[in-house]
Amino acid sequence: MNEETEASLIARFQSGDQSAYNELFEAHQRRMIHLGLQIMRNEESALDVAQEVFMRAYEELPNWRGEARFSTWLYRTTLNVCFERIRAEEKQRKIRDHMPESGVMSSPEHDAIGSEVIKAIDKAVCALPPRQRAIFALKQYQELRFSEIAKLLDITEGGAKASYHKALLALRERLKEFAPEGTRDAQSTSDEDSEALVKDTNSQ
Image (cartoon, rainbow, N blue to C red; front, top):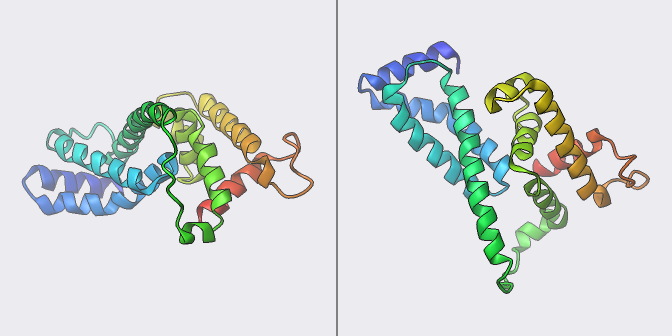
């Protein structure tokens, strides 16, 4: 959706046309869910993030002045909501770490799609600091340029690149046991190998 169409729909919504909000929602919902999924690594959490973002959008749009693109605002708000939920989950995780295992078994369907690798990737991505996790998702899955990521996170382009590289190094180290034979040494596994492993498995 281009900027002119966004502005037109927002103006219609501000004039009382509820269908205009529905059009904005339909145009951007899937991308925000996808971004939430790549950061949160959990479908339910991603759906909750998207719901929260569009609730905030509904409250924000009546006073929207068009100082930034609506899609840019959605990206920033999605990142902020993800950061908030990551912090909350970290607190809950600390509590769960002191509780006994629940004994819940994974489903046969999940086992059938290579759950060992998938779980390892999810764990590796979730272990990244929130900002690194966000930058990795924006670059790897949303395919944004570093200049765009820098603007979204209000950091320098160099900072975005550095964080992305640190994320790749951390993922490479955590996932080196799944690398092809002969490349399992942390020094010999390339950034491209790490990116490909995470991206290919995520697409299954």
